[in-house]
Image (tube, rainbow, N blue to C red; front, side, top):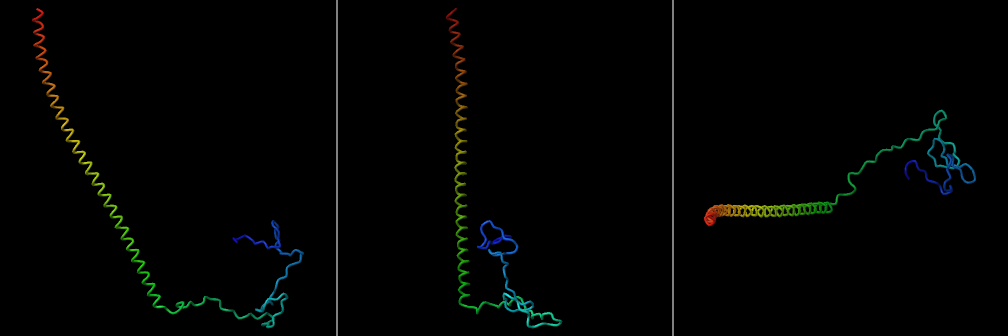
Length: 175
């Protein structure tokens, strides 16, 4: 139960609140067991006067019991050398297993890095080859364009000469 909550005794119905004084169903006050004042005697329904009185009629105080921490023993029992060796071996075996697992994982990561680097190198090589092929084709096309341009200019010159000759012949035929 959390702090601030009270348990409800079985005799109280749902929703009924209890008053500070706890009364039974018949309205009588609850009786509490009491120990004799100033004694360490057993609890009884009716307290008796203490048998040992101190000075001036005051009850004699019981000697105080030392309530302190009990000293801890050095170990729970005798050290079992075989069990200790077995535990050390198990620890070392587990540590070696963890180291092997870490080495395996690191090797897998290294292999993955190398695989990725090889893929990057292949992609870069393919890109570089495609760039060289493009440059060669572009240069070849440019050379063809220049050759066609030269032929076109030569054809233009030839046509001009032919046109002049034919126009001259046409003029002569008309005159």
